[in-house]
Length: 370
Image (cartoon, rainbow, N blue to C red; front, side, top):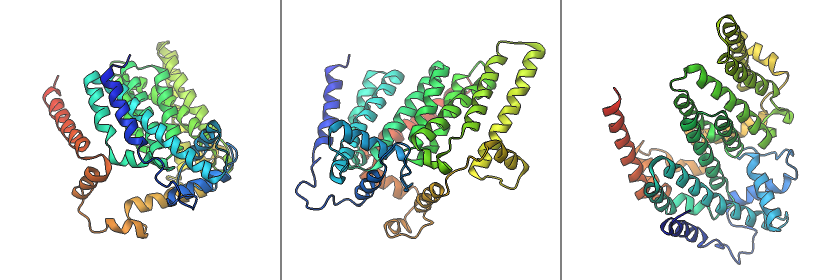
């Protein structure tokens, strides 16, 4: 049961996010926020789960979730109802993300640290702002937190179900925003921690299982990231086959184990070649050509790659558009920290993150040899 202090902290976070929810009440236009207008227009066109949205700066799962929310709230599929439903989704996602963070902190460091997290997260400026809009960030944050929670579960339990849950959460997160590719790092770390004492092959098996579920989940939540909406069945099958063979190798010995491991290695090479071919890396190499043949016609949608590429170009400053020129000639590291303190995480959470990172580094440095 949650204690009174914890409940009060969650209530504080909720009240702060409820304030000014109707900020545009009385405005004659459908909305005054350009990102909301774009999301609303695309969501109107995404009439079915497997319908091509024709817009790929955001993932399809965001549009589907807004439609489901509109149906649950009985607001219909008109533009205004879609925008109001999206704001409700953002509010709910923001609160669920904070709750998932509380669960992780409570399991890892105890209730007092978990409550401190809720207090700091309640005042995060960016999350407070995005909980008021039908934009992708609040929805994306809840899938990121779900993926981190699943990775934590994998690290402490080493279970196959935890690996599958991690892959599913990361796949769904990618179907909201492609920035979730960075979640591959905590997944690898979690698999290595889960497999400590059992060897590298155990980690590879967990990663193969997570990869198969993640790719399948990504396709299901955003089918038109692939050309023609064709599912990447070959990658899913070979990844699962590698995971099964590695699991079998733990139950046999001698020549049988060597044969099973050889088969698992061959399947892993094919899977790797498929991934290279799918992403277009080394497209002239024999390995990539082999992967292209094994994919059986599955390929990423060029429109999806273009949409993602445009977003990446803006982030790295390669695209000359008006709303990123403000970052020109700013100081590296110091400018982002200033922006995080004012508009992003807030000063208190930023200081807590920096202090925690330094303390963790010192703690690891002292205990490394043990």
